[in-house]
Image (cartoon, rainbow, N blue to C red):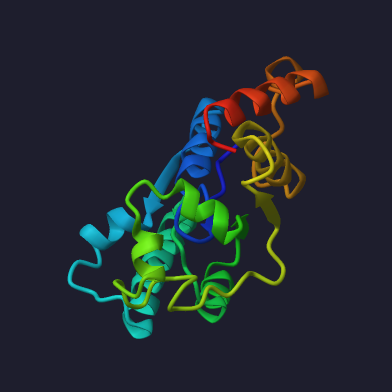
Length: 204
């Protein structure tokens, strides 16, 4: 059976876990024999959108460029995984309409946790007024209204978030269900153990 393409779009503020989850989902889909390409917002800015600023107009241009590449990949039977802050709802909705086969994952995380996670100290600089147009501080982040999946990355282990995303893709019939023996389901006790380990490491 020929693979049908679709776009899996991760949105959320800086440090919310988009790239981590996107890469984890990518590995699972590749293991199932699917063709997958990941478009990371930072990587695209370095290559496809080099020279763009962080004004609203340039942010919109950057996200539309990622969306255009996702559309081409989707049309050609590839799973396109977009991972970008994409702060403005209107542009995300435009990309959804343009692509059609589109699944939105909102990586939700409160600001105080994002500040704690930020090893580069960018949030602190933005809060101190040292960085302009910083999403969530001096520039808005508009939450999705009807995403297919919401993951609270401050509350649940990445493995659990990934499992929920993959299950949703199966429910929507975008990917085939894994054979029973390949399912990576955890018992409640195992999930608790994983969460405790991640808390001890400072990830949660």
